Amino acid sequence: MELTGARAHEAPEHRWGAGRGRTSWRRFALAAAGSSALAVGTIATTTAAAVPVSFAMAGNPFSVTAQRLEAEGAVQFASFRENASGGQTPVAAVGLRKATLYGLCQSAVARTPLGTATLLIRADEQKPVRVSSMALDLALLQGDMTFGQVEMGRDAATLEGGGVTGPSGTYGQQAGTLTIEHMRLEAWSVTAGMFSLNGATMQVVAGKHPCR
Image 1 (cartoon, rainbow, N blue to C red):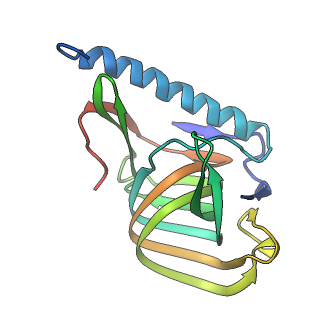
Image 2 (image 1 turned 60 degrees about the vertical axis):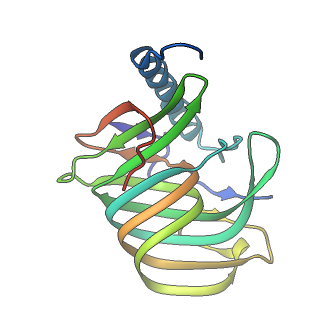
């Protein structure tokens, strides 16, 4: 499974501103799978256009876990992103020039009139996931982190290497390298120039089953 933008080798410049009766889970799974395929198509289209992605965030963050993340070119600053109701949600905006993840799991819990279901995507634990030009809006990040060539307190508008910058006067930080062991994050949104998963599986299951 590979999502690739037309300029995946470059880090695009992004700027942040501010029922009744019995449920047919088979029918729901097919509908949800179709929706997820549409979402994948949307991501591929927006990244291929090589423009900053702008869309209203979903009402709930999704989870991503990995045994290990190794990244080059990492930047971070605080910002706000518009949600589907038109309100502003505080986020930790993160940019990674390129990253490799091992043991990736992604889960998104959907609450619908038919009930609750979880979309799960898992990559082969023996085959690393490779990502380039990644921008994330995070609600939470946990893990054992090691930073190299760190600069803290840098103006977010002058950040380099991660492909994203923030408003002038905003606190920012950057690192030449970043390693996270036992990573867990809750993300509002993720975009990437290229997202390559080898031996990946995608499934929809009834109930709430987030990645652990």
